Amino acid sequence: ERMGTFGPARTVWMSATLQPAWIATVDHPAPETVFELLPDEASELAKRLQAPKRLARLDVGSVREKSYAARLAAAVRKHHRPGTFTLVICNTVDRATQLYRELEGRSEPELVLLHSRFRPPERRAQLARLQAPMPPGGRIAICTQVVEAGMDLDARTLITELAPWPSLVQRFGRCNRAGDHDDAAVLWVDVSDRPGPYPAEELTAARQHLLALEGRSVAPGHLPPVSPRRPEVDVLRRRDLVDLFDTTPDLMGNDVDVSRFIREGEEHDLYLFWRAWVDDASREEQPSPTREELCSVPVAAMREWLRSREGQVAWVYDHLSERWRPAVDRDIRPGATLMLAAAAGGYDPLTGWDPAARDPVAPVQTVTGSAPEGYGGDPASGLGRPQSIAAHTDEVVGSLSDLLASLPWLGPVADDLLLAARYHDLGKAHAVFQETMRRGLPPELRDAPTLWAKTCARRLRHSIPGFRHELASALALMEEKPHRFLSAYLAGAHHGRVRLTIRSLPEERLVEGGRRVMGITHGDVLPAVDLGGGYHYPGGRLDISLTYLGGDRPSWTEQAVALRDRADLGLFRLAYLEAVLRAADQRASATAREPALEGR
Image (cartoon, rainbow, N blue to C red; front, side):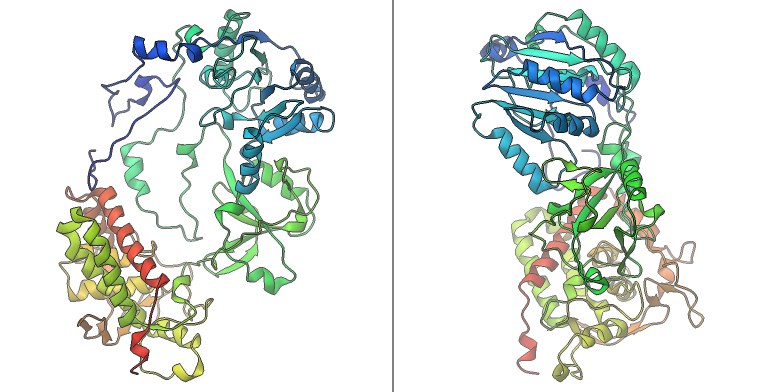
């Protein structure tokens, strides 16, 4: 609300355990309005709120003993009732997988394992099994914390490891959820001698609550009022949010790691996907992964697993060299994405990420990812068919005009957006970009005087690594219309590479007395360009001094920060404008035509 948005942006925060005071920070006061169930509303939900679920402690010995999983499995088999649903919640993926292995093949009930280390297709398959009609022998689901929120499960028997009190309250809600059973049971296992991933003091407090409730019901309406300690987690402050607006990748092409704001516990994940290839050449041709392929894995577990494998089994895409290269130790970090050889194993469709799995991993069959986009990459410029700058620009402006007709609140900035759209690909007239385009054309078109925005070949690299045409577009627009920085910023930002910060690549050095930034050398010439719609750029030289800090005029970064902090814009509105221009560009590229060729 303070930073501003286009139109109203309202949120509702819902939680069974969150204390209103926990939301308060120096940036945000405790909420003034908290909605709770009124007495008449609670009476309508009485069956659920009073649903009996008797609490008892389950003694299976120390979690540190190697036989823990076997003894817990024996207890699960003992307490499961045929034809019913039993839910077992472990605090770690490793223990959940070990328990599944112990029960596998030794229990008549159907077994389902669910945790956060599955690829999306297998995760959906496991969820479908959970929601399928109950088999005659019943069903036993072994899960982790993933069931604490957003899952409508109704177990007759719940077995859970000791966890912080808010987590236990969520877990209790997965037992006798609809209130249809009179003999539902909640059994808890004390794992305080190995508290991870939770703080030991939180488990101590939770154990005291459980011992006080022994033999009683833990239905929502029966739980005593408790004031749990505020969790020690990273709080997203206003200054953090403002800093995160600049998504400029680091010099290795890596995005900023935000996992500390969106995860609980001490684990930090990276992402894996598996592919099969026949030789080095086919490995280099592997496209970027899709979401369907990604499996999250703890960094520490990945390091240990790689040490146990012989030979090179992991690759990472190098955004600077624009190639898949062998992963090294520095690449094993939170947020990284690694490509693994399918033959290396490490994954099982029924157990997910499994370091003990040795069989080859079947790659996800619906791989439709595009070529990886390196620091200087622009896959959308290789459409498979040619198109001039003028024709593409006209289509982008037309697509943007259609969008603006449906977005009346953008009226005050419509002219800025349209100007940005008209100039967004002006930089493609640069000799480096045109040389790349012509290499991808059929021979009969390579000598045409046309300035190309799109070419036929789909995977081409510029002769100058890291070349960004949109920086040339923005610099040229700034020289021609110095008072239209919003348009220049949006033109520069339409690929997400030129935003608040503009930096040189490591190998960029002084070139012929000038500095090179993102492949643009001071004094580079742009020719006269037809931008369609009656717009003509007269040509000129590119001045990259705007990218310097501390010059005679405000730098790009200084002006971009001022734009972000403008009272009538702000980071949410500015990001929205970026998205609108990007959407218009992508829509035009998806339906590209080339009328200019017919009369050439």
